[in-house]
Amino acid sequence: MSYWAFHQQRRIDYMRYASLQLGSDADAEEAVDTTFDLMMDRWLRMLEMENLEGYAWKILKRRIIDMHRKRRRRPELMETAAFEAALADHVEDPYDTLTDAITLYAAVRDLSERQRDAILLHYGMDFTAAQAAEVMGNQEATVRSQLRTGRERLAATLKLRCPEHPNGKNRS
Amino acid sequence: MTPLPEDRTIDDLLACARTRNRYTAYDMVAAEARLRARQAARHRPPRQRAADTVPAHTEWITPEDDRAPDADRAWWDLNAVCLLALAPTPTSTSPPSSAATSPTRPARSSSPACCT
Image (cartoon, rainbow over all chains, first blue to last red; front, side, top):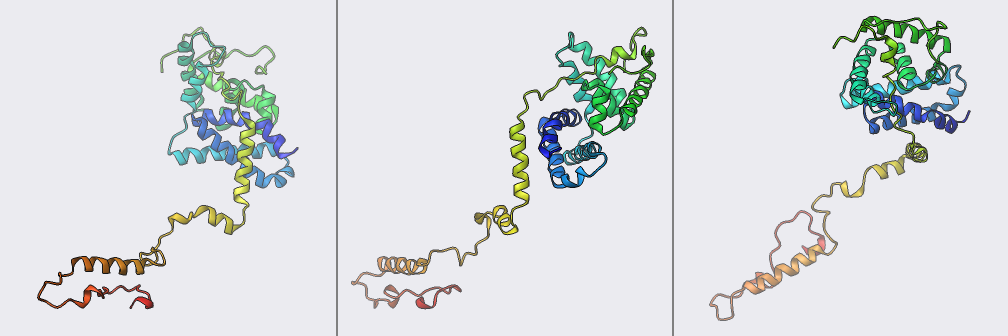
């Protein structure tokens, strides 16, 4: 795969993820720019790696942490994601959705990092489990497991029922 | 945190999680151009990079150097004209001062040899 093909393929996904974490288009763009900039320098070495996607995802996450430090801010995922959810096209009542989304994303904050990423990509950004796994450089089965445990932990935290899916899997 | 109704499931809440895609019309061409520019800036020869990062107008110039080549000559001419204008009239009893035609130059460390 060429560097520019990878850039074309992942740029928007990375931008969406970074903007939900950073709460700013400009900061997201800088974080993603520095991510791809670094990748351009390391691309030949990355091509030899077993898990190129996983390595790229790690770089992105590091750059997002760097941006947080640079701006001296704490992570803003919950606020940003909740408002973006309320503004989504499918929403009928933005206020109800905003209340629910704030409650949900406040609980998501307490999940493990991997569960949080899986939940955000799958439920927040509407990726299938397979797509989320590809972006994170994980096995699909691993992501399904993270989604299942994340969903159960959220249900326990929020004291909600957690019905078993008909096929025993998360939707995908 | 307000308690949620008991009849709801976690799936009801997760259905509210979907965020909008802010970047459906993202300018990929501009993003690529930005990345190419970053790389080009980093891989320029060191001398060219230094020239780019230190603009000439920000360099400090000492007062001695900050003058045109003939500034000293102009200073002498101006001084002479001023002294002539202020010099006593011919009716004055005192003899004309030599300073009127040959002003004394104040000590200036940077005075060129031709003017001393």
